Length: 108
Image (tube, rainbow, N blue to C red; front, top):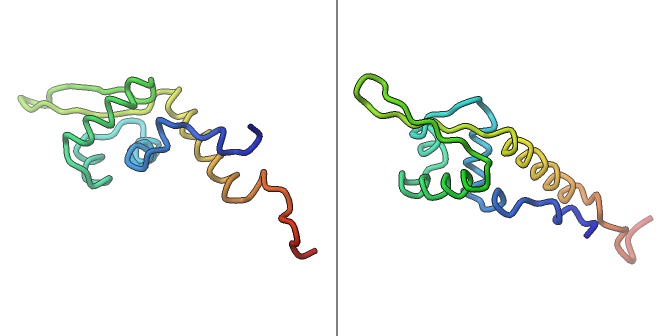
C-alpha cells in the first residue's frame, strides 16, 4: 500500500495510547501519576494501556521506592520513540494529502 495510512502503527493509533506515548515522547522519564492526570484516565486504564505498549516493546516501566513510597515511572524505549515518530509522520502525510492524486474535476 502506498497510502501513508499503511505506515500507521496499530498499537499507537488508539487515542488513549497515542496520548500516553505523546506525553512520554516529551521527556526521558515521566511519573505514572503525571501521565494519568495529563491523559485524564484512571490508574487501572493507564496500567492496561501501558501493558499493551510495554508488550509491544514501546514503553519501559521503572518501579522504585522514594522513602517508603512506591513510585512508578514510564519511559519510551528507542523502538517506541522511533515508532511514535513514524506514526506522527504518517499522520502528517495523510493530513497533507501527500499520497492523494489530484481529485477528478478539481480546479487547475
